Picture (cartoon, rainbow over the protein chains, first blue to last red):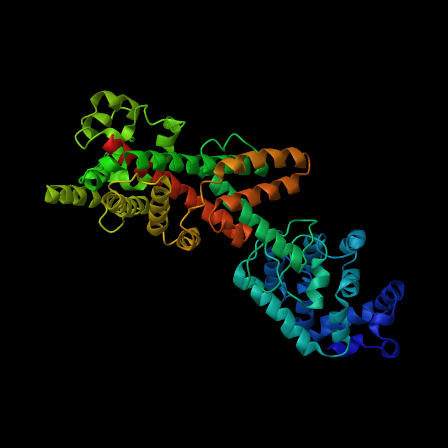
Length: 332
Length: 162
């Protein structure tokens, strides 16, 4: 099937040696030959290879799959569709897209020209079986993983083939066993920057989580401000603990024996008092209590009313009220 | 009396029998650790004044022991066991001053500012300086939570006795 493509002229020159215009001329010379050979030989394999080259979209893939039987009739339309989609993806293809659509036979030549040099060489050199399997692998992997259009997945494929492809444009089809990183359009997609980007995204996710955690962070924009707030908050918490322990040291001699049980009871009461909801949902919201209490406290001024003072009897009243109003009903 | 309390505890916590939220676990552990320790301190040093540092030590120890699933608690324990003087919170005030100075210096250089702040944060967290940034940010989250719970516990204990 591929014998038709190998001409005596080609034998003297290797594909890589030819310059671009020479290649184009050569291809144009053999177009008729190619078309004839392809249409006559009914070579689904070559067609498959050519169509799958640079195909980044499911649409293209599916169209080619559905059409690959129709070698003769659907030939031109396939290529038109193919190039309609792969404009953006292929290097140097943009300038030739207009011609591609007008002349279906040209498209194949252009495709051949724009294909990876390795692949073209291997085609020419009759290592078609290797190429086929590689292409099929790629496409199989693509099918397996349901590649979304354009901006999905690119990672850590070290081969020179794919590195050439990935040097420009949005997403590429590569080995898909690693972390999924969005390589946006125009961004570098080499290994290091991808890892960098993944790391940065992780960090920003954590920053967002911290922003939710620390009260008052929502108003501040920018990482520096959020970090500032977090630092201040941690410091204030630590100062509070210090102050409380100092106070504890002062009053330590007066510690009663039943303190442990009492304090646990007070926790329960404190948890219940702050949320006028049914008990059933309590455990899930308890984590929010500290923020609420600390907000109300402001400074570590313990002489001010303290919501922890209520006993268990209070909760029934407190479910409708905020904790501050409990101080009137404190039972000691 | 004790049975009543235990029953009350059970009633409250049995709403979701399988899941005990971590905050409750923490506070229970914390108080159960701290209060006996304080009592012991009390009993041992009846005549002399209870040293603030030792109380601090107990407080920090209780914090570290109640939160053993986190990385920072390990570092805290190490610090505590190596030296009798807890160093976690005493430097907090000086840190505040340092931040002001540094942010003034850095001025417009954003990345430098951010790195400075991250480093400050690392200093606040026990063991933060040995972690990398990602890890530290994650640990800071639960450190903050534990600090908050600790303040509640301490407050209630103090309130109890006054």
